[in-house]
Image 1 (tube, rainbow, N blue to C red):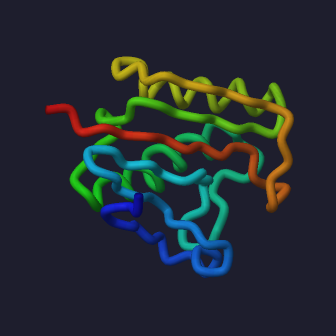
Image 2: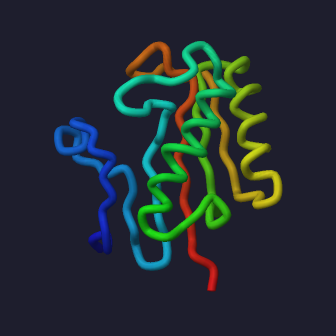
Length: 130
């Protein structure tokens, strides 16, 4: 089944790799792994908490807003970190953003990203509640 709508971030990698920042499928929005990269520049180098906040509140929230969704509509998150220290900061940011929403969540550490300065990558699924 094809997506109802594709949301692009304008990244030059989207057509090369073959992905979208987000896809809308019925009442669901699936947001691809998102980092703290804004305008091609990684924000908060060396700070996992800051990177997680930007990924959630700027990149992911922006993609959701394009189709009328908010972070309150998120039902599942996946947080990927380089190591346990990065997981501490990312977990704190996740708790601040989703403490009341409480989506299903997966958190993994021990990963390497394409840019070694990236400490955190987050993806979410959102559902528009009736």
